[in-house]
Figure (cartoon, one colour):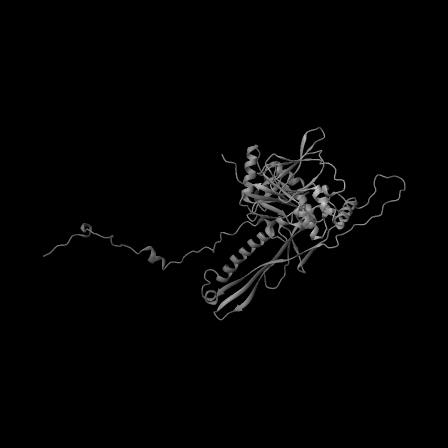
Length: 472
């Protein structure tokens, strides 16, 4: 008769026997609680939320303005071949006395006579009081303009950066003397046109001489500080003097903004749409995430599009350069002072952090502003809103935008058209495109939008903002 050990006395060489139903098997009989499909690419999209949107029923929005004598973006474009830099001949039309001159052969001859020069930080390029004898184009770097104040103190009159220029009076018959000292803030690459080189070209071109003379005469036409045709007025008089007659002149070719579009085709297999809709509708969730991606692209285009994007539509007179690299309180004050009723700043989160570091160094702190129930950092009471769509360059620089908004304020407005066929959200529609031979359902998802700057001073930018912190 054989005997066997009790269960508690048995020895096992492998895993212990399972005594209850396992979790994996139990889950086959359980109902799983699911989240909605999540997406990392969704941002706060403050720009879309804060812009006032104008209905554009005809698909095109025309911005009518008073006549402005000065045109152009105020910046010169260059081409680079290795270490050599050349100015694009047509870009010389940005110089006030050459604006509107269309003889490409003469412009090419002038461009060929520019000399490339390199300057080290702190090196003087021009000196106040000396004859104005060169036109300078800044291909790379930052140059500060220094003058003398009322009490003899040194004052900074501004900072010029890539694409800027000075010395345009060199082309005039009587150029006069420099009224400021130009000094390199950083290592600079500058193209210089000596006056004798210009005279050599002008001596062979009657059209150039007459154009410069005519542009010089036009410079005497009455205009206000914004360059607009002046409106003749009388004030402070007594008696019955003859009052001046006047009229408000308009631009003959106002700018028109056409609505841009972002589109995609959403495809869903009919089997998925028919069978897998509990607890969530598959088509609805696919569409929700697709719309989020389109809205992200919309905001990216509103910032970066070369035709209507805000970064590319800032007037040159509203572009501010940082004084030292990082964004300082002084830079923010200068940017804020250049327009009335600034509604908000828009900056990359890293630029906001860089401004915070500079404030900490001075013992300052951000204000706080309530924006749609959110406590946002603010400067002088104006909220600073984050926008990751503002690019950061490989050199670690970014930009900070400041804007006034609304049609009634002559500000920045968003453009859209609502009430379009098959509208899903304002300005966005979803159109059924049919089912193909593979039983795949297709939907065309489109959103239409643009942005317009009604008055140049409605939008400003602080450029070349260094966002990297100083090494410890």
